[in-house]
Length: 168
Image (tube, rainbow, N blue to C red):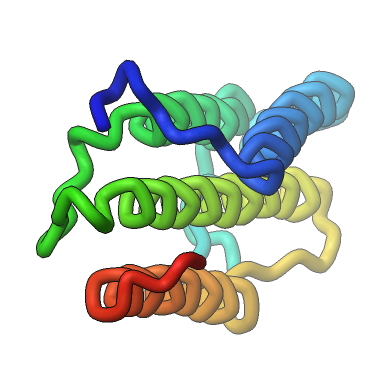
């Protein structure tokens, strides 16, 4: 399979890509609607206790949505380039399944990261209003468990494809 002869995306991948992009745009719209009420200083960093410990001008509130959009675009392009995937033990018999599984993994991880960054952006706005908002104790560990859990599930699936050639 070449990059020009791609496997069809699953419905989950299509929906996930569209939903994650819609969340990015919703976040941008939210920030536009909140812009006039934001104080001149907004939190840009949180410590391990989830408290804001770094502050910047309110223009910095656009940093996370910008990074999120760049990440979305980069990972979406990467999903379309299976020749760039570094997959060990790739054979002619399993390459389509391995590429499809790895692409689905990238798509899922992309969505998880984007949702976390959008949540962090929303929390920054809430914190700047003085509302009780915390990042660190609960959100980051849960995000990391979900992220690495997803990675583990898909690596297991790749091992299963490699060993038994099972259709997933």
